Image 1 (spheres, rainbow, N blue to C red):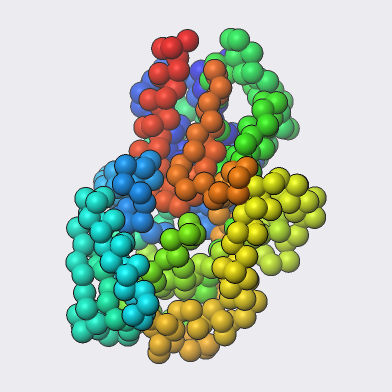
Image 2: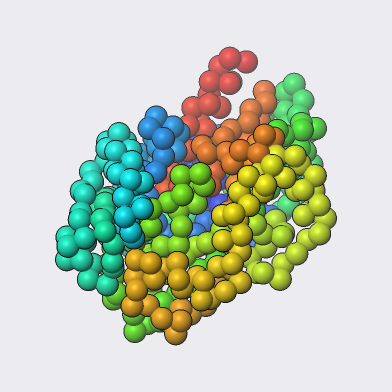
Length: 399
């Protein structure tokens, strides 16, 4: 009998396992991961940004956890000698129509207690000569890191303290009883007093294994990237972002210096046609049918038809993708855009068609599920873990 079993070997699951072991050193804790190794999905395919907490509603879990996570991630990296850099972010209004949106974002950044500076066009050009815009906001606390290295450090801490990780072990069923949870896997059954699921792209499926009909569905959005040719590796120093569409949870095509010295361009956001559809050719018709059977997904697609078509155009046309980034970095050419692996983001969609904007948790008496943890979940992983451990203790005390 385990005290805790965790499902999911990404950064949130690893951070939670580590924090549980720190809090309860004598507890028997098992982490299950269906892939052959850890950090194979969202953690290993993201943009590597240590977010500052710019975009999120003041007081929301995303705002609180991201701001705390920025500091905690940097401290963890320093403790483990993991390379990271604090480059700062520039959010650029490419033309006059975006000034009002940039001004609203400037106010929100202040409401979240972050340092920010308004730059007019000449000051922007002085900071980043290759970037053009009518105005920009500089946020100094944004950084870059390899989150696979962060996840590996969390795993080492967990196992060094006596925690157990089993990779290549897929969960196939769950049964919750008054005194335990039985976790069925393709390697046999495991028994635990409490279960935590950090299943990412499979979050809704894991909830459903308990016989609960989740009131959300995970929509997989593929984020496609290019990498700049090595000769353009010094074109920007800051992270360069456009002014985002406030109706969408995605931040637009941006330039991101990576910790390995490269610069990525992207991502866009297109609905993937498979739950783990990293390639355009990855299609699972049963998965597509199941998604479309959920009324919230149909409502979401209808409500966001125009931006969805724009994202699809960028996916299908390198010229359209280039045009998006040339709005603020006009010197880039088609030859500068080289292939780079895509990522898939797990985005919860509610029954009414709303793209769930905040982190979302689902509880039962003996289980806790991280139901929605898209960006900035990597930055926020350590505070999310603290939140989960606190919720588990509260549930245990109440029981």
